[in-house]
Image 1 (cartoon, rainbow, N blue to C red):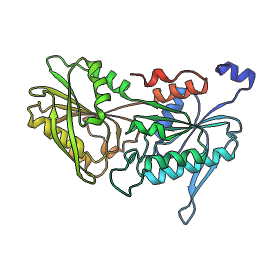
Image 2 (spheres, helix red, strand yellow):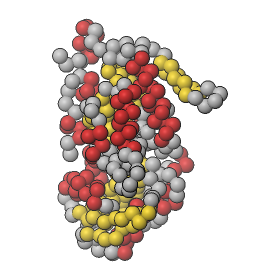
Image 3 (cartoon, rainbow, N blue to C red):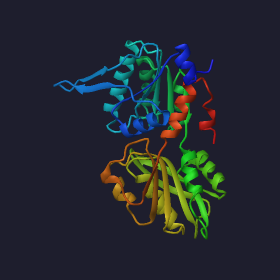
Image 4 (tube, rainbow, N blue to C red):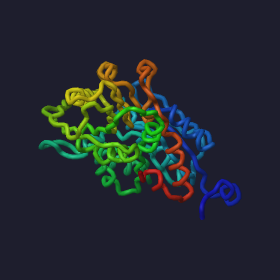
Length: 327
């Protein structure tokens, strides 16, 4: 039976409850507003020695609980908070616990690139499942393989819908556009954007000479005299974006480059790198909160709250979520 609001009232089917940790309260409030419900009440404090303390302010017994918490910086703090929240919900007899993870921290560590390295993305999956999560909703995972790390259902959403809609609505009259993938790993997603805009694709080929350092060694595709749109799933320190912008300019691209990303971590010297005048616009989403001091005039922040709300509503009512990640 589909759990509509009226059915819930009359047949006392499991209630939908939305809780959120402290990582991105603005997104949580926006999702709640889209759902037409209030966020669940809880208390998050710390003892004098720094230990985390969490207490739920309301009953969740038998409820379908959705817990929103991106594991963005400070990653370890937000991850532990998420795990403790799951445990609290489980011990309070929640019927189901669906973790809504707008950003999946440690997603870049999904394989061993050198001997004696951990596969931390898999460890995180194990921790979430062991803590008591019954389902996962994620967005634009850094590696698609992470979906296979879970033995519980995982719905993988993408912000490409939102970003492509915004790009398609811009006036590109008189501009020869090409969409650029900064490396081979993003080609599949970038090809979708190019298809939506009806323009060609260019690809950068990247190496990592040392930990945390990337270099563009080759650029495939014609960008000379073109207006370029670069998409990457995440921008951390801005190094990879800086490299691809340099490569595009060296190959004759116009110095009016649009950069788009789902997850704007913007750590270290990222803002300094992204402030360069050749980057005309930086398009981001609200999977990760953007502090006021990082709100450059060139930044356009798009909200993914309606998409997460639609996914939550579909999961709760046993509807289809596939339309939200088919693109």
